[in-house]
Length: 145
Image (cartoon, rainbow, N blue to C red; front, side, top):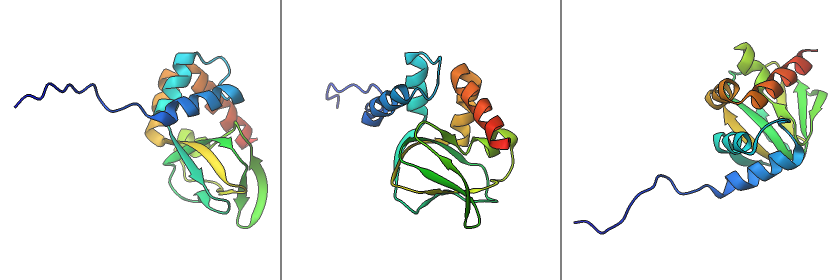
């Protein structure tokens, strides 16, 4: 029985527009086109992380990365903080690009809104969006300095 309904793929994700707007506002990916920003937003998922919760743990596999859209994260070895991740910064990329275990634990120092990327999404975006790759490379270099 044909009900006359047509499918055009999955429904639009309302978080994509919100994420794209915040990425643009924070100028996370300088030189990225509107199309690039939309592709980056589509590749990620908006996630809220409560203060005190862990985004990633030291000596675990590199399976995700985040862009902090709102809030502050603490980077630690054990209980000692040695860096902070601010709004507009990328975290988790180093272990992905270097194919290694995590070198630090990242904890939400405040409630966070982040754009979460899988390892596969990071690799795909690095291969197809030059502005994304440039930020990943720049951030990874800064995190090893």
